[in-house]
Length: 572
Image (cartoon, rainbow, N blue to C red; front, side):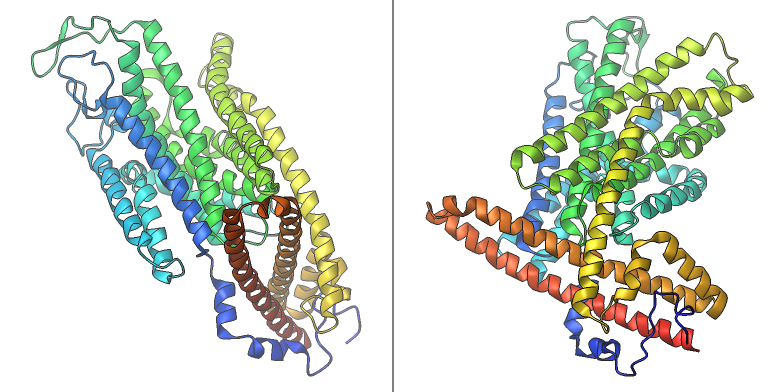
């Protein structure tokens, strides 16, 4: 075969005894299993993940305490405002009215409390287990699921009410998630990790925002109306006199504070999700692109659930204000699909990704704080400014017309988000450029070290580093040898890039560990406790290094097998 048909990428082995056949057989079964595991199981990771979950639960219990100790401003108020209902509101379990869309299902509330109890009990069991026991890992993830997963009940109640709306939002959300995945270019996150981020946003993040804010609204309302006489002309079911004509000033102030609270909780929940995913999942690259992609995926999930309830809400109110569920679908699932929560979640994730690249605590705190402040401010500004802009143009544009539907309303909604979207795109661009430079170095080093029989050869380096050449290679292979050979070549190229990503991660981790050790060495000699902690950390680092080597061997073995498959298909 001439050099041109090989198209520079697969390099089918002309030698009948390449390492591609011996490498898989020499790799232990445990190596392949280690390379295929997605979740981490070391003690440090488990402890940090549980610490994050405990902080979330602690804040929720604080919200409960504040709500229970709030000033009571209405007759016969229950201990928790989420149990109070307007006169005539349907009983629990009925989700067929406007009021029930915003009511807290009691089943979900008690489910969260039960999850907290179960999570605490599991942690008590984990403490008594040896740190290296595999059962401790399983129980840790079970405790996380109990503590945080129960918040998904709030989202599931909404999604279960409108299954057709859920199905209608799936295609656009799936397409957007695919585009977010493709934006990485190199060092792709595992697909289960990306799907988990989407599920976090759709179920847990939205549920946390709902649970926290409903409690906060009652608390804020109690303090805002403290000392105000609300007895008056209306009578509830128990015969108590209640006046619902609240002053506009206090009402707007309550809504403003609640909006700020909701935006803060939502972005903090997005940050928790990104941190947990980075802690729990094994992945080869942690940088600004990693955080940005995870945050955007979580925001897309949040937008999914928010779209369902918004479409349902405006469908109910269509007879009052003329808005329709179809218009809300167009705005949230088409015109601004990559705006709003996706942009703000990406900002939060980008801050965490940047923080993961530095070892200095002050810089980490500053980067994470900057991302959170930008996202929270953007979320609040988006709600306030879009409403203000809408009021400005209302007298000059016909509401509900073609121009308003297709151009004016989407522009008003997106205008406050443009600066934040621009920042996200610039961060993504700089992150991808850094990845390309690191990939070039890693691919070249892997090719030089492995030689002719390795996972990457010198002839393949230019093709791996140039997306246009990779695409040309796929097209040429498809035309000459058929779709099966092209698909095999694509899998082989992806496996080669995964090997390069693994090598990049190991080299960066080694450099960071060396720099950190050089800075902390004088302090570590002063106290025995610090020495013990350092020894423990070194033991864990040795274990992680061994697992990383096994993962690298598995990745190389897979690339070699795929090389053989490509050579067989091209040769046939």
